[in-house]
Length: 299
Image (tube, rainbow, N blue to C red):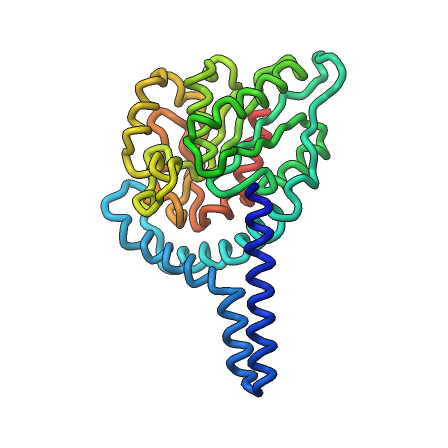
C-alpha cells in the first residue's frame, strides 16, 4: 500500500511541476515557470530545514553533544540528497527489486547467521536495498519485512517480525541479528517482549530509533505516531514488559543531527552499547559505513 501511495505522490508532484512550467512558458513567464516548478520539486528541502531549526532549539540540556551550525548544514545537505532516493525511487518503485535471501538447504556449520531488517515510519523494505544487495553478495541470509498497517499500532508489527525471525532461525539454525531503523527499533522491542526475543536474538541494532520518544511525535495523529511521543504511556508500558538485561543485546546508533528523533539522547537505551554518529541526519544514518560495519562485526 505504501509503495502505491508514494508512487502516486511522486508522479503527482512531477506532473504538477511540468504542468505549472508548461502553462507559464505558454504565457511567456519563464521565470515563474522555473521558480514554481523548482518549488514544487524541491520544496521538501525547506520542510527538512524547518525540522533542523526545531532540532537546534529543542536540544536544551540534552546530554548528547550540541551540533554546530556547520554540522547541521552538512546533515541537511545529506538528507536533501538521500530523501528522494528513498521516498521517490527505492520505496515506490524498487521495494521488491531485491528478494529475501533464505537458504533452502538444511542448516549446517557453514550456514551464516541471518539478518532481519525492519524499516521505520512511512517506509517499506525498499529502504534497505543497498544493504540487501551487499548481504546477498556475501551470501548472508536476510529477510526485510514490510510493517503494515502503515499507521497502526507498533504492537501489531511484532507478529510480522516473528514470522521473519522464526523463518531465519529454522533456515540457519542460528539466532538472527535484528536491525531496525527509526520506529523499526521500537517494533523489534515489541517483538522481543511478545515473543521471548531476548533469548532468541543474537544482537539487536537500532538506527535513530525513538526509544524514549521524539519531540516531533506531538504533531502526529496516527496510532504509531502517538506511541512515539516523548515518554508516551505505550513506551512506559513496553518498559515494564522488558527485562533489565535486554538492553545489553542492543547497539543503538544515534546522532545529534537527527532531524526526526530528537533530543538526540532519546535514541539511546540505558545499558546498551550507544554509539554517536556526528553530523548525520535521520534517513542518511542508514547510509553510514560505520553502521553497516557494526552489522558485519556482529555476524
